[in-house]
Length: 175
Image (cartoon, rainbow, N blue to C red):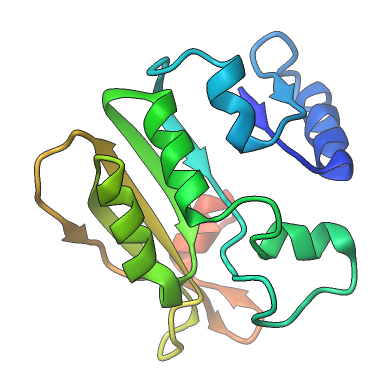
């Protein structure tokens, strides 16, 4: 089950289901994630994956299009809403995987812990070796024990427009 609030992105997600032959296996709901606890079973999921907006309103570069701005900035839901919804949806032991901005990791971890989502693993994503992380991938477990691993960083490019071997493997490209 996928969830998307924005009209255009919801439409594209539904078309992707058809194009990829996933009709009957994957469905998208046109909902606000804050409404999910009212329409989905509590503790009904083994995994919740989110790529939420992670910039505070009024910070960072605001995209000219409303769709892109809403996808990047917390205009409809914030970090507390994200953690709350994930915690309600997950069974004990269920995993929450989130894509987030490294500058807000402390806030993310604080909100996760408030909702009994114990951070377990993190991987930083960098455009090139030597660059600061642009994104982090975080996995947490509902009601999990403490214990945290920082995985090796993922570098996207080894030169200007050449993917690293790991990225080539992800995309199924020849080495």
